[in-house]
Image (cartoon, rainbow, N blue to C red; front, side, top):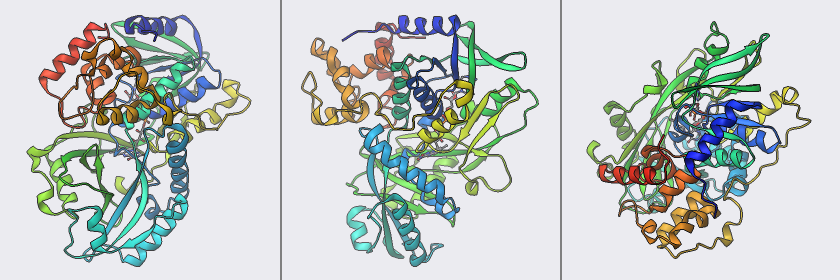
Length: 507
Ligand SMILES: Cc1cc2nc3c(=O)[nH]c(=O)nc-3n(C[C@H](O)[C@H](O)[C@H](O)COP(=O)(O)OP(=O)(O)OC[C@H]3O[C@@H](n4cnc5c(N)ncnc54)[C@H](O)[C@@H]3O)c2cc1C
């Protein structure tokens, strides 16, 4: 296997950024920017993708990690959005990333005190499942439901609706797109912040970046602003008087221990519009989310004690009280910002539409929408720029992300424990063999990062050499599952820092 030196690869990409004019510069390496870059590079365009932080480091690693039609959007009347999202769920779980997107049944318990009549919910689930082209749409008895979710609260339970969606690892889905872009020739650089948009004769022609203490001017025929919660900030770099195009809503999640096997996730109705989830997640329970207007700096969004209290109280509507750990038993938490179209009304009932807008010099800004529909959003961006980019047509056919093909035939170069194998195949697909290759020579790479989790040392050097990780948090939060399992310790952080140093990846 070639052993790319991360420092060389990064300095090559930085040199490339400053040394030529690209067809397309994408600002923001969340799932939308990464998806745009991957599709554009595969269409034969020269592409640069930059992120001020880590790829997937903002919203795209802070979601509920569901690839779903979105049951609540039916309630808001967004049938088209639900249909599209279901279609994407099928495409992602069969072609694009079958190793990362897995089907999961969902139970929606209907309590006497709840806002809906069972017949109303059943017709909603029937429509949802018809749009999903799924036959899983029943009302099941409390007894059967408890067989699937043992701690389900039975008091006042009339029945449960059953339907199917899917779960994923959002950060790795994003990274898969960055890698697809890079393999198709894009220059991809994280920790490179756009600080100014450059124009010539009134047309946008690139951007200025701050990266490692340098300022780099990047030339580009077309610029896409996919800066997520910072979208308006970047719009104002082109047009200082640009108004507000989006508003933000904070959503928090918490991971708690789980004692029993769950055969389904729970969708818990909180009020006529808001639902929360309890999702079996890597042997634990992922709970959330909250939904509260956010006016602050997107870079400082954080989990507050009240958020956790609310998440636990929301979950307690459908789970026996002893299931939920006290706040100090919460293993991991994260906060993210939904980007919603600007407008009046509560954020919880705002439509989850994607906002596209052209600036006066031609920069296209895109924000909002869902992780699930990122591919459609990326294709929508290329359609809008087809003329400027000189594309005769936009190829909408789905393609497998790196590692997503040949999953039935993966041969690992060394034998590993079944839980380690399953984790590697889930996170890397067929590239798991590449992750393990150096371990054939150096058995210390098979060591687990934490005795209670399946991630191993080989993933750390792989993250640095092949996945643009340069900081401990990149590895523990987004390349492996360590931090989302609540297994990060100061000692482990030191070990990971030492490994990053050893392979020469620190920025
Ligand atoms: C609480 C919550 C739960 C959600 N759950 C789900 C779910 O279960 N399923 C689903 O389908 N969707 C879900 N979503 C929606 C989904 O997560 C988002 O739609 C998606 O992640 C948005 O991706 P993005 O690329 O637009 O933004 P981001 O991921 O935020 O990426 C924007 C990037 O731009 C970079 N950037 C900003 N400014 C600059 C600059 N000046 N220079 C360079 N880079 C810059 C940032 O560093 C960032 O990485 C959820 C969202 C939230 C908040």
